[in-house]
Length: 464
Image (tube, rainbow, N blue to C red; front, side, top):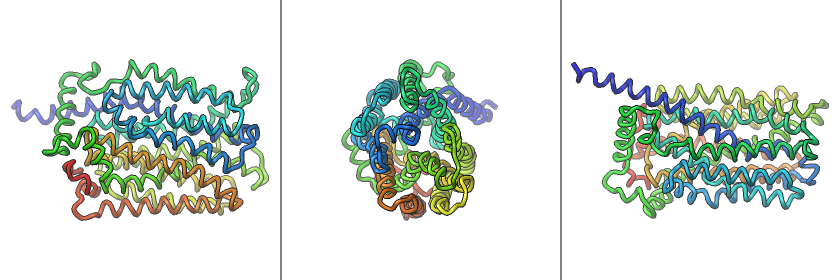
């Protein structure tokens, strides 16, 4: 009788453990991500609300300032994630937050485009490794079958950053004159301090592994540690050396899967940051294009509109993938829909219609991203997972730089946003097609997403 009840008991323990992680851990890491994304995109709210005029920025200069952040980020992304794997997430993520908060605070007193470039570059160095580190950290807490759900809850912070952050930025910008500062400088002051505070709290709040969590029962700890150890053993196979040091880096950097996923992610992030950095400027241009006028708060609220539906779609799309098994169309479908929709926005005849189409694009990007991030952990583990996830995210940061700089340059070159947004659409469609190709590649079962449950390929085969 006890043996018959054992599966049911295991199921109860599983549900309880995942629920506690979803409540006690994920919201805090998501809050860290919220502040992270707000700090790196705050420049997009500042530019059309005084900073561009005060610093005499052209579109290309603003695009370069937006994108140069990613050069510093890229340089230290993989080393940072390897350091996180070595020293533990609690120490490393807390250190990153305090460092970037201090650098972000210095934007309050920037006086020239050159100073803006330098600070954006240093901010990238300070933030390097946070996002892939957070993805790696959460992936180390739950088995593969629960990761889409957990990463979706985490990823909700990104669209909600704009839903909440844009009006917050508007309120801070309207405090023009506070402490003798221009409104956009007050905004930088207001969004930077939470990073420092949250980083200090993270040092004491975060826990490196389930075995050390006092809020889990011993049965829940044993179940989580056992499930994760079994998965890692299955991925590592006989060659455990692949999980350490130089072999881990070699595994990640010679993996065709990792590089293909990197290119797919490039297209998504190019679209994400083209919207993030230039949507406030595009909305500001509605005033001349459609002969209307908006207050600072009006523009902030309009900027937030596409991201609230995106958060809702992200949640339900990821829940569907988690409950029914991740399919290739969970990633490729949104990529193609988003790629087709973004150029359509250029031909709308009103601000409302333009924002409606941009909303479709935002929903598409955010629907795919958390599902996408459940894929690398299907075939990488340990230090190789740290290096592989960091490499994929590094390509995303190359896209972040390119999206800012190229969009601004093409806008100055062509006189409008038609050419740069057609490029956004093309790259997103390419991401969708690459995802289909990767999922259909013969002999590559670990990325055959139409399987209801992922099959763990040996890590030694990750180069395929």
